[in-house]
Length: 517
Image (cartoon, rainbow, N blue to C red; front, side):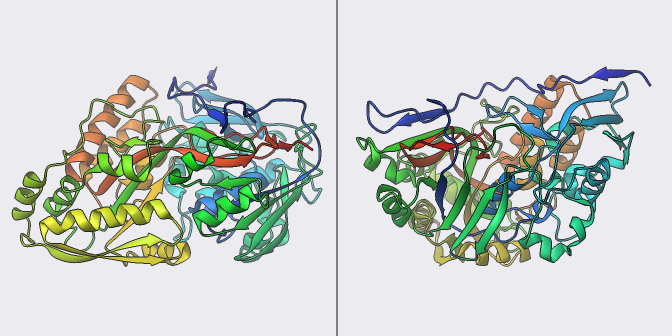
C-alpha cells in the first residue's frame, strides 16, 4: 500500500502558554535561564507515595509522574499540548486506509541496566499494554490494535481493525511505556518495585510512606541529560507542612501546591511560583451505580444546589475558573459555548421533587486527607445541600484507601480531580464518562458511548470536534459529575531550580531540570 507521512502535530490547540514566574517582582523565571549545571540532588515534596511503578497498571498521579522519569514511550506529549513529538520512535507513517502504522525506533538506546533496547522489547511491551486484564486500566485505548510485529530490526508495525485517530497520542500515554521483554527476567510483581526503563532516571531507593529516590541513568540516550544526579520524592501528606519544608529549604519543589498558599508566597524572593496551563478538572464524583445517584434528577438537583462560582473563588482563590463541561478547556474539543446547569436552589428543589427521593437522603462523601481544597469543597457542599434535605457525612481518609473504595465501587461520592495524560480528548472521555469508565462511577449512556466511538474513527478534526460537542451536551444533561473548577498545575519551588516545566496535560519530566549552586 502507498504510504503517506503523518504530520507529527496532530492538533491546533492554543490553550495557552506555560507561565513560570518568581513570586517577587524581581524573581527569576526559573524556566530555562542560565547555563545548565550538572550534578545536584533535587528533593520534591508530594502528598502521597506511589502504589507501584508498572505503568500499565497505574492510575494514580504519584505513580505516573515517577514512572515518567524512569520509562520512555514511542511518542511524547509536547509541552504546550499541541500534539506529540518523537520519543523512542524517531519517525512514523500511516497507510492511506489508516489501518497500518509503522514506527521507526531510534538506534543506540539502552535500558538502565545497560542492556540494549531491541525491537523485540518494543513488540513485547506494546502487546503487554494492550492485553486485556482486570488490573490493567488503559487497554481500551489500544483495542483498535489487532497485531504488533517487527518489520525489520528497527521498525514496529501496528495493524488496526479500524481507523483510530488518537493512536500517536495514545502511544505517548505512560501505559504504553517500553520495558525489557518479559520484564528482564523479573516477575510482574517484582518489576512493580524494581523497574527497568530507558528514561533519564532509575530507581535507587524506596522506603514506602517516606521517600522514593531516583538516580541518574548513566545509559540515557539523550546526550548531556539528565543534569541532576538524583531526585528524591518525599511523602508529606499535609499541604502546610510541604510549604514549610520548602521555605526551610528541606525540599526544593512542592508538587501540587494548595491554591490557598499562593498569596503567602508573594514577595518571597527565594521561592518561585509555577502556574502551568493544564487540563485539570476538579469534580465531585457521584456513584451512579447505587441509590440515590442512579436517579439523574438527584444528580441534577445536587449540581444546581451548589454555587460553583463561589467554590472557585473561595477554594481556589482566583487561580482557577468555574468548569462548564467535563472536558477540560486545556484540550481541543472543549466546547466553550455549552452552558453548565445553573446554580438555582428553587430549580434544584423542583428537580429533586421529580426524583425517587423528594424529601432528601443521607450520603457520605470521601475526601483525601491532607488535601485542604477538597475538604473545603466537601464542607461547602455539605452546607448547601441541607437546603435539599440532604444530610452529608464527610469522611476523610488516605489516598490509598479512597483508591481501593473507588475501584470496588463501594462509595457514595468523593472529591477528586483529573488531568489528561495525552493531547487527544479520547483519554479524558474514557476516564470519566464512557461505560466502564476508569473512575468507576457506574455512569453509562449508550449515546455517549456511540459518539465517543464515532469520534475516534475519523481523522477529520472538524467532524471530531462536533461529535465531542454533542457528547459534552449529553453528559451535561445527565450530570454524572459535579464539576467545580478548571485549575492550572501549581508548583512552588526554590529559586535555585531551573528548567522545570509541566506540560499542558499535567505531566513532567525532570531530565532538563537543574539546580544552581
